[in-house]
Length: 505
Image 1 (cartoon, one colour):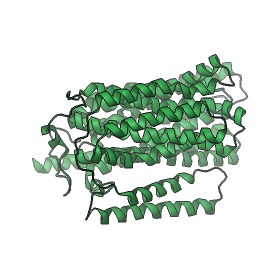
Image 2 (tube, helix red, strand yellow):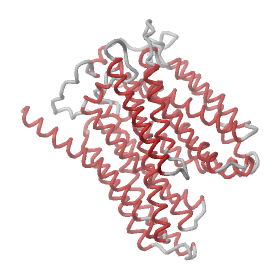
Image 3 (spheres, one colour):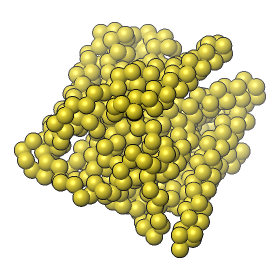
Image 4 (spheres, one colour):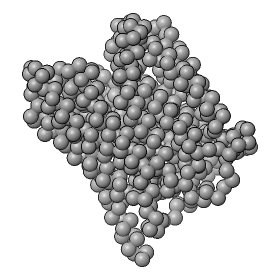
């Protein structure tokens, strides 16, 4: 979104100005009541929190699940990452479905599927059944998530979306913060043998509440027609993203990785070509003209590189603290708390100001996050090695990491919600769900890409140096580079807008 004083360029042909939606009739629930904005946001926060909780809490439970089912390394990867895969695959198709056929029914279907898959996961008799249930959990969240973002776009004017987006982003960060504690407490109270099952079963009452709230609070479908959905595009998009995701598999030979990469890129290229042709005779799965909207294209680019750095940072620090410095999961969780807590604070505070400050707020957040992460390198230089007693390393670890990670977290919060607001500010209502789904797909793709690159660099550095302190620095530099790319892109855009404003004046 542009600042209020800046002239805004017209969207490409075929796209209606998103702000025109403010003159439309208000949405109504099944009972005929006008849809209330903030109750919808509250439901959205619960969806975001539950989606994040089923990542952070499940990761804690994986070792115990492994003891019960004797999972292979590949099984463990599918148990955790398979959730991300189906989540990401569903986002764009589900968003488009909500755009053309209404959001309430598919949201309730997604929430209901999540409840059923959580029951199956909690009662799973084998590891295979559990993995399949996790895939359906990811699919369910992917069905529901685009609907809440599409509704926020419809219910709030572009200048007012920052705060609700910030609150929803805070829900995800809060799940990262409490997930390990939540999982650990459940396992401790219920016992190691069956405690992990309650991590899944306690999703059931929350999921049921979300489904009922969605049915009661969300608007009925406005569309009486039932436009055809672009199933060929769905197939090409799913194939391309799946092939690219499979590249992350451990122990895969380089020629196989390259083959998967080429096949995935070919499928995505086929998706783009098909959508261009399909748009001449029907409604495509994703309107490629959106990439001609400068705010959307820039925001998606920034999101990919920001989440590449953000998700990779979580991965790198977890590996470094536990495998490198020899601390247990509890210490690692405590050390990472400032990052999650800072993101919660930054998301809410910056979201409320996104409409007034605009892109400079995102640039400041990227700069603060970059500086905070760079400060971790200083901590790394002075931190004693894994052979030192915990009494010597723990105070410096918590104090040093705390400052850098708090800055990185607050900076990250200043990026997530404002960038989402700006990215979707000029997207028309008819494309809200699919555009939001594409943005989140970019976030998931960026996160997976960042973890894969940083993970490979970390492994290579550890094997090459045999020293975790030295090996930590190259991956950290890569993460800083990801954020710096996003910062440069945002600064270039700010300069462009200022020149445009000056010439218009």
